[in-house]
Image (tube, rainbow, N blue to C red; front, top):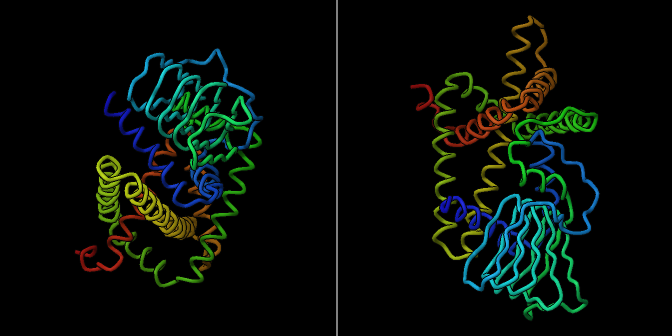
Amino acid sequence: MLLFKKFLFFSGRSVIMTLRLCRVKPAIFLFLSLFFVCPAQVFPGPERDSANSAEPLTVIDESSDQQVAVVGRNVVVNGKAREVFVFGGDIIVNGTVDGDVGVIGGNVIQNAGSFVGGDVIVIGGAYRPAESNPGRAMGKETIVFGIFEDELREIGKNPASILSPTLSLAFLAQRLISVIFWFLITMIFSTIAPGAVGRAIANIRLSTMKVVLYGFGGLLTVIFLVVAGVAVLPDYLSALVWLMAFIVLMLAYLFGRVALQITVGKRILKLINWNIHSESAAAILGVLFWTLLLSLPYLWTVALLLIFAAGVGLAVTGRRQGVIAS
């Protein structure tokens, strides 16, 4: 449990440091990763006015130099803490926080007489100071992105909910838009980089298992390097490592999904004996197949992992045709 809390804290710090370095709104990142990758519903809900007193609480009454990382609970700081990070809950500051305060899927509520010495960063919520001139250290920043609050809070309170999406009209609309999006992306990739896509498809057909195994090895290596970097390196370097790893994995996911969609689409055309040699037909069939697979409760996590592994494996083996064929 202690190791998990440390990992959660360092991961949250990496996200916060990345936002601080980039100084751009992460709306595109959140929209793509939640809307098009995960099958959970991510339509914005009503804004919350304050913390729900019925929700579980973690209360810090004593003064200590501890770093607090909590999932799915509200945190009330009556005493003193070094830094506070919450996923899926609110932070209520009545006392003192020497460093940063960060929340994903919740609000930061700073009551009268309290003090925050670092930055206040909120993703999916709001910053609500009780005073017009709250107790803050000079030169510190307030970064707020008020999107997907209810969805992020629900994931924090009940992580298993993301594994089993709820069937609804909103969910079906989301999947339909996802089909259109990935069809366009697949056709764009096939048009601007036909050689790379063709080699990737050939690699998958020639040795699917080796590509996936290479991908799993590369994925585990990236995760290990990120965790080690976040735990050992200074904040600004760990944020850069986290950001670079995120970009690499997103590109791998994008390319891997495009290659898998065309590969599966062509396989479907062959199985149903359609004498159609069209990239568009193969692309739409592949997109429909993977969108459906990524919408199935629990099984979507396996499909998502396979896409990441395939993308990383194709990147590792893209110039090693001889290795794949051996």
